[in-house]
Image (cartoon, rainbow, N blue to C red; front, side, top):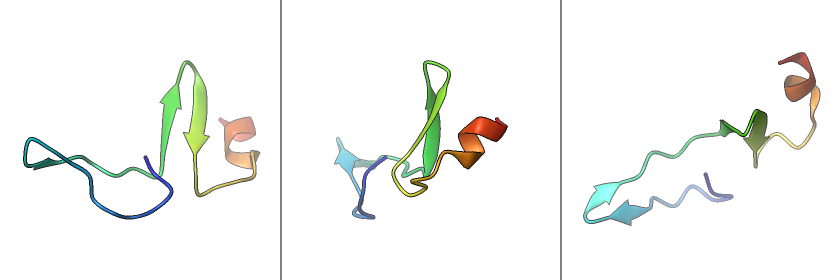
Length: 41
């Protein structure tokens, strides 16, 4: 997850770009700055 849409490659394989993910039980997002979706979850 990055703050831009530039593709990232490792060993000529493009890494998936996601809008959000869950890390240690908390939803993380660089695009959605409010916490309403995390509170609902």
